[in-house]
Length: 96
Image (cartoon, rainbow, N blue to C red; front, top):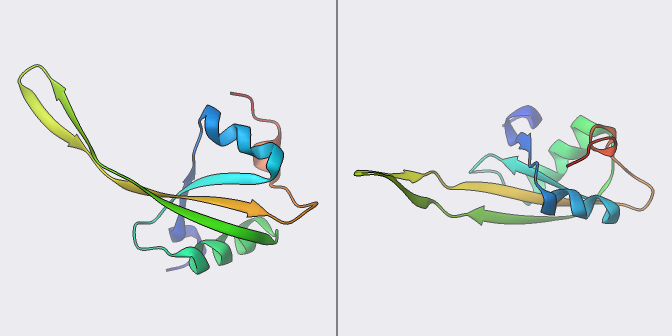
């Protein structure tokens, strides 16, 4: 897997934006990706140094609309903390 395949999208939520002050960035990642791959992808794509990576599996949720039942798919996210003095510019001007 190359770096563009590992990181799918940034997670845009109030909780993820509250971590920006602590240099923590949240990404939706590929289901088969592991910590080392996420670290390498962030360092390659954004040109920053990563201090730590935390991986979380978000479980599937059952959903219902009337008599129709379904399931929202499960996905994996990574919370990446950067080293002191590092930042990713695409997140800096964003407001939630």
